Figure 1 (cartoon, rainbow, N blue to C red):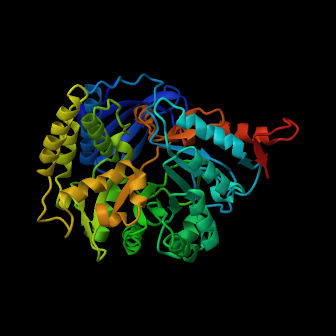
Figure 2: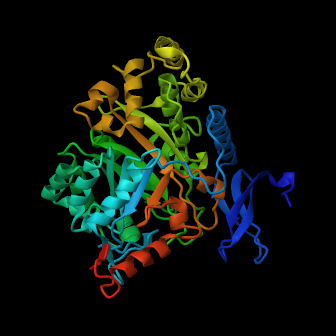
Length: 506
C-alpha cells in the first residue's frame, strides 16, 4: 500500500523493522516540511521517525542521485544486483576493541571491560593484502577500534600499510596518545597521514556530557603536536541535538586557526546505535539539514541550501578525469543522503571564502557529468577533448569574485587533492593548490532510518578477518554484523582454542 499524496509520499524503501530487526518495507514521506520514515513490519505496529528536517533539500538530494547514478549507467556501469557493492573508497580495520574512554555516546560500545583483543600484526597485514589484491584495489585505509593507538604494534601496522602501497593511511582516534609529541613523531615516521580526531566542542562541559570527562586541554595539545608535523587533521564532532549543536561555529573557527593542518570537519549526527546515554529524545534529532542551517546561522558564511552539496558529487571529478584519459573505470559514489558538505578556500590571512561565491558548483558538476569517454579518440583526440572540456568548465569560474591569487588553474590543482590524498601532504601544497577546509556531515543509519538502497551504495566498508567487506552501516546498525565479527575475534584469542592465535587477548 502506497501513501496517499496528501501525506507527501517521497519513496518506498527496503528496510528492517526497528523492533524485531526483520526485513520490512518502509515509506519515506514529507509532512510540514520534514521527512519521516515509517516502518511497515507485518508483526509490529507501524512506527515513524524523523530522518530529515527539510523536505525540499531531501528531494534536491534525490536529484543529485539521479545525476550521479544515471551518468554512471550511461557510461556503461552495470546496475548493481542485490548483493553487489561498489569498490570501497575507504576501508576500515578495527585493530582492537579496547578503549581507555567509556564515552556516554559510542556507536561501538567500546570500553575497558570484558573480553578484549589486539589483532596480530600478520593478520592485519593479510587483511590489508586483500584490499590491494582486489580487481579495483583500495589503497585508502582507516584504522579504528576501540582506540587503535593503544595497540602495542600500531606503528608496525602503519609501516606495513606503507610497504603495501597504501596512499592514504588514517586513524580514527580520541587523541589521548597524541598529547605525547614523541609518539606523534613516531606515527608520522611510521607512515601515518591523517588523524580523524574526535573533537566535539570548544567547551569542556560538552566533553563531560559526551565523553564523561573534561578533555579540551588534551585535544588542543594533540592538535598542536600534529601541527609540528606534515600530517593532517580532520576534526570529528559527534553532535547531539540537546548537547552541542551550538559548537559547530566555534569548532570551525578553531579549524581556521589551524588551517595549514586541519583539512576538514566531519560532523557525525549522534545515531541511535550502540551506547547512547545522552539526549533526552525531546529535541528534534540532529540531522544533515539541521547541520547546514546551523552552520550558516552560527558563522554567516553559507546560504541554505544553495551552498551545500552531497559528497557523492565529488565522484564526478574522478569519472571526468578518467574519461578524458580514456580510462573506462568509474569512481564509486555513495548515496546523496549519506553525506552533505561545503568547501572553503582560505587565503593567507585565514579568511574563508565559500566555493559557491566564485564557482557555479552545480553547473560545474553537471558539466563534469557530461564529459564523454575518449577511449577511441587516439592520443591527439584525447588532448583536444581535454582542452575543450577545460575551457567549458572554466566558464563556471568567476575570477573577479575568487580569493586573491586563486586562478582557475590553481582551483583545478586543488581538485587533485580531492581525488589524490597525497597531493595535500606535499610540501607547501597550499601555495600551489590553495589552502582549503571542507565542512561535511556523514549521517550513519540506525534502526529508524535503515535503507537498503543507501547500504548497497556504501563506499566505506569494514574488513573482516577473512578479508570480506561489510558496509559501514550494516556493520554498526541494522543487522549489526560487528557483534558476530568481534565475537569471532575474541574466540580466536582464547589460548585453549588454538596454539597460534591470530589475535591476542590482553
